Image (cartoon, rainbow, N blue to C red; front, top):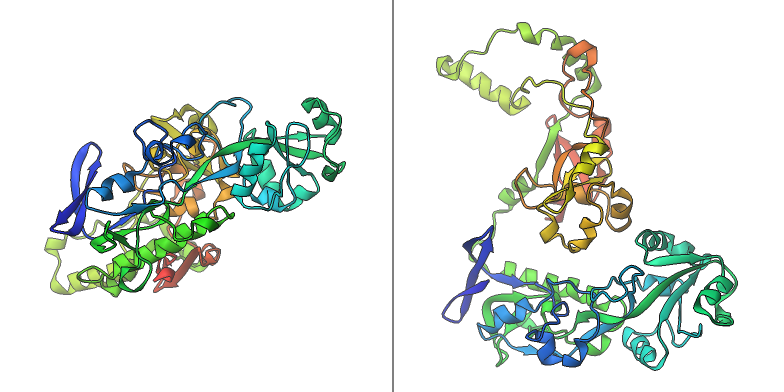
Length: 481
């Protein structure tokens, strides 16, 4: 809500967390996005490019110019606020054709051979041209516009077409004749061919911002926010659409906004990391990034544990620490260091959460989904989900595995889990019948730990485990440092 300053230096932020105002001290990196999601009369867009406010937008309410408002109060400079890119591929949803918010159809469809047709069924532009060229062509053509790709061309992007079909963005036709009949035209452009078609209704819409905060690009100013007089503001950095891109003419080329956001983010992050007083101790960083999934148990040890399980109830109670001798305490510490704390006896857990139970949690206030067999409570994640609320709300109380896997790497959900009560996805358990589990051996608890076979499955850079002194560690984060 506010940048904290000492003289001309930014030293932290004031923020609101769960209704309470808090302050966080340190260097500040602004990465709050652009301003194409706010079309109100007092918005940055209304002041800088009012002619664009009549168009729909592919940005949600989070893209509201927060960076400009926050940093303007400490003297930050801005430029090129009129430079807002339009996309020609904003989807017109059949059930909400007049909705101001639009989804974007991937340019990969055009890359695979997709064609843009006007109301008469004719091609009117080069689909591989920049976004601006295609939008300008749309202004001269007759709406409505359709993005069409044949079934054979779609083979290389079939997962995308399937995704858009599921979301009702695309519709499949038996061939050009079927589409021409619906459009009430004699025939489609000859370049379409005779194959079955995937078709999406599209329209121009606001997409991304090439203007924003002025940042440095060379020497000691790289990644730093500059004042109106082009001087670096100490302690303040920015990246992505919050900033003004230095190459506005390239901005409408497919992929450039994303590339710029990644590149400028790295520059700002590195600059901010080098501006602190004392860097984090590397040893502390490595240790804090390690997590222990469980102790590794070899199959021979599993058999031994199983044999010993029946004797556990008859074992004598351990002597209280205050009654142990020095030698006993030393031995106890060594045992804990080598083997970890003993597992507590717990009743057999249910064999999973039933789908019927998941379906009950289908509101924003009580929201569960299923992803790859995990039942996840996403209630607190919805407001902060990077992809926006709509991407999650559409699947509440349902199995969202197919949609999730289309756009996320394996392990992405698991790496974002937070403890119960945290802000983010909370693992509730595994999907199952919901019936009580029968413990092996007629009631004896299964031995604790992981097999080496399980550890061996986690062997990629994005999901990496190792074994050290009998314990398995998730070192995925460690590989980055």
